[in-house]
Length: 187
Image 1 (cartoon, rainbow, N blue to C red):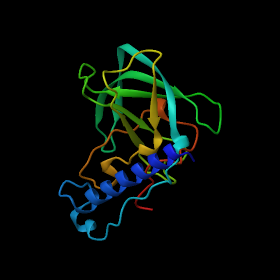
Image 2: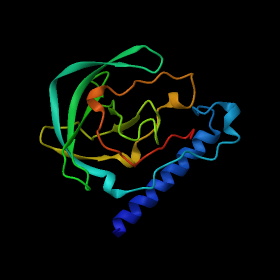
Image 3: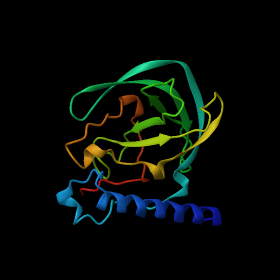
Image 4: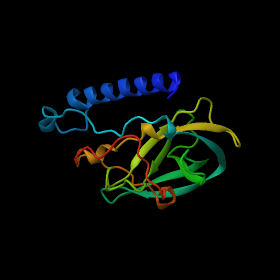
């Protein structure tokens, strides 16, 4: 690894420690209060800079609605605002994930990227994982952005039935294992 990779890994580990502290002690933690005392942190894949990928951007000027079912059986309406195309270092296959918003006119709303992969239900939460992107000033066609799967996180509904979370639509199911980000904490 390069020095920049080492710095990245240390920053990521510090962020994970901060998140673990929040989950273990904060009143707004998704961990039920009765379970917080024994909570010793989330389970993560080892940080891997190879899972930070450059993704090409296709912006959708006329976003299509995409209904997403939740873990509690409701349906939420999102719109597909962008498509990311990328390849992982270990293969050349182009992969595609879509990014969504509930309010596409809201420039401050992060781009929501829910996904499933071959670890889903095995090593990671059965309902999939999420990424959020916060691009400065929006995205443009033919731009490229970094999509960092080391930041993939488990939705709150995995920790408590008090939460309702959207499930990744089939168009965001990756046919590969993504060994990055959070693992299933209950295993």
